[in-house]
Length: 184
Ligand SMILES: *[C@@H]1O[C@H](CO)[C@@H](O)[C@H](O)[C@H]1NC(C)=O
Ligand SMILES: *[C@@H]1O[C@H](CO)[C@@H](O)[C@H](O)[C@H]1NC(C)=O
Ligand SMILES: *[C@@H]1O[C@H](CO)[C@@H](O)[C@H](O)[C@H]1NC(C)=O
Ligand SMILES: *[C@@H]1O[C@H](CO)[C@@H](O)[C@H](O)[C@H]1NC(C)=O
Image 1 (tube, rainbow, N blue to C red):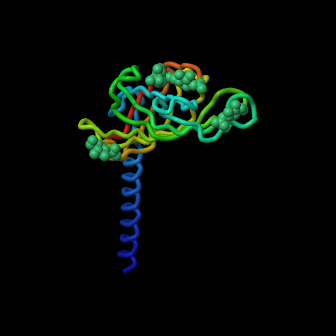
Image 2 (cartoon, rainbow, N blue to C red; image 1 turned 180 degrees about the vertical axis):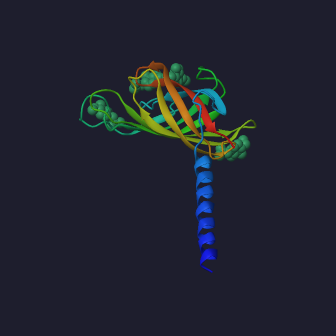
Image 3 (spheres, rainbow, N blue to C red; image 1 turned 90 degrees about the vertical axis):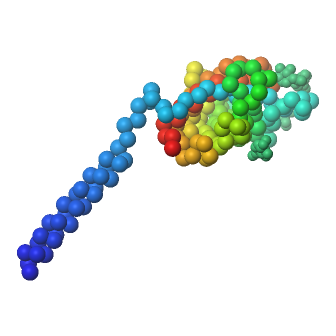
């Protein structure tokens, strides 16, 4: 009787050990930054409402800046911007970027972004959700792709953004190099 129990305990012990190693293998993915499963470059166009350009504007400030520093601290902008494949503002949009950014640094221009890319065409249907810090003084900034739906079901990755053009306060354009590392 005692021997049977002993064997049983040994059996359970090794079963747990094997189960545990499977668990570790399943969770140790070797992601290669240079090998996304999907990659595409899009351009983001933001035309800020200035009081008279209502027909053309794609974004508006909803809170004004505070008096903390001289870099728009606290200013929040809500946008619904066209995304194009090349950098022409008037090219047919392939997606919309819907979300917001706000300035959050008192010693330089620095923003925080959160938005959804919405695809609704014959080629792609679905969304990609992106968020992160936009440290404007850096040449390129990496935002996190935190999820997706539809054609981008459960995706994750990195969106590398780079300033592509800026015209005063009314218009700026970003290049977004979107690299997905989880594709289903
Ligand atoms: C707003 O922008 C439009 C188009 O960019 C420009 O023509 C207009 O003068 C601007 N208005 C103000 C008040 O800056
Ligand atoms: C924001 O504040 C500035 C001055 O600090 C003012 O000139 C401007 O009209 C304000 N804009 C809005 C939309 O309230
Ligand atoms: C997507 O496009 C279709 C066809 O143009 C349209 O009927 C539908 O309302 C659109 N959906 C969204 C969420 O924009
Ligand atoms: C719309 O805004 C863009 C960017 O500021 C500008 O180049 C363009 O002339 C504007 N178009 C109209 C019709 O005002």
